[in-house]
Image 1 (cartoon, helix red, strand yellow):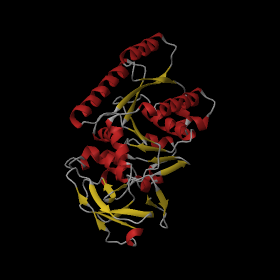
Image 2: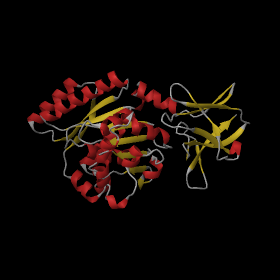
Image 3: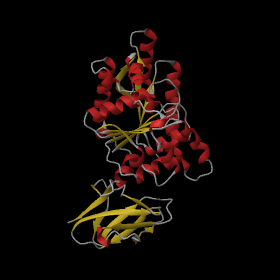
Length: 357
């Protein structure tokens, strides 16, 4: 799974256009995609035709509650493409979390608790570098920085790279940057000069695909559709198909500590000589217990011990075969976010699945 933020402190550079159309294009390639609207303006939500009256749970709830997860809040755009919507209430998150510890990793922690059957999670950020954007960057292993053809666009890219450097130095978190030329009309001379400057300044970060300027993007957003659905043969639809292929093709090149950490979290329980080791990453939880078919789904469950690094751990002796299980985190029954193997349960959700050979 790859988590990609779309961020730039400058407005009007095509973040939401890129987020919505890239998500749709990746889904068309057969990938399972989640688009998370992390902007109080809710433009990604509007771009798919949803209004605030159309949903009750949103990104706001992912920040401020521990028992509401992605699988509770998403809307299905089409098979393989889900959206967690946002509305104006998201603007209250920064004030609500002002005194909370670790407030800049609330989104990351929620994603880790969620059962995420996705190949890609795209996070559309607001045009600012505040708490919402920091949460998105600290949850991501990559960031796409759309830049429009202007001198202000160049300055915004420099500022975003300074932000990434600060996250590396102060948080120990690396994010792979990718600079995307967005909304470019390549005919004017000054635009070509900006393209040359971008290529000179960011030769390793600059993406090959160029998103060309076209009125089709505004028409598609107004219709609540990705441009590929509005006009599949348009230049805009072609550009985003190219971008989706480029993003998917870079998967083998992504190898940074942040993504390695995600991989480690998603490996699931491990069979060892001491038994099956279960790990749960719920650092703010007061109590974590384990229940499943091996204890007849006891509501009391089996207690996990909290290690010094904040990870909860337990070793169990289990018989050979298939075992279904869930964690009970402060009373909430949750699937194992570290285990991608699941099976549907009778309540419309999913239980985590473990095979002991």
